Length: 144
Image (cartoon, rainbow, N blue to C red):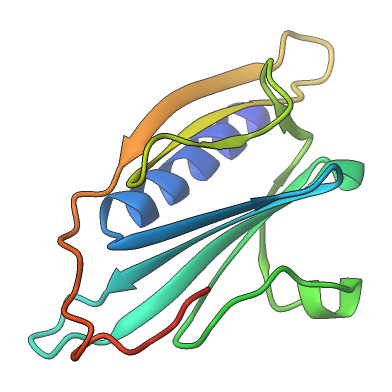
């Protein structure tokens, strides 16, 4: 059950963040992936925020964080302490990446979570932003 919980948590986190976003950026290296979105708040006067997910291949771990300021990949373990661990045992499904750009406003999410002695739990979905690109005069927050 734990692998299923992790898979659903990761999927729901990314889906909610991307659907509400107005901009997104994906950065990948051989060892990590960093995926960030810019999202308006739900208040009458919009309060912008940045949300990001960080996958570390060596640890098979996926983290997330939200901030009212620009987000960058954590360069050290000490910087990662402020990020929330979504789960361990997370790996790309079949391709080399968990996140892949799907046009300018979406992301393909394809991963599996180790389930011990049984088959891994797999998630594969594409999520697109439903957000309207903001007016630059009212959305100065630079998330990336």
